[in-house]
Image (cartoon, rainbow, N blue to C red; front, side, top):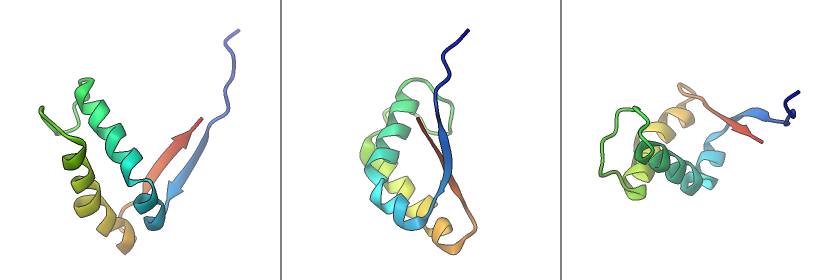
Length: 73
């Protein structure tokens, strides 16, 4: 039987996005570099990823028109 691991899914509020911007940017950059097809092409830097989160995601989270779900193990 596989080992069960605990995971928690939550919605990250705007201040949480700001606090974890570096983590979110690094994760997205790593996903793109691993071949994820999420509408970004190589070369793709952490700075470009951070800019995306800051300019495209964060304003909508602040307005309440976008939610950022995270899963933490």
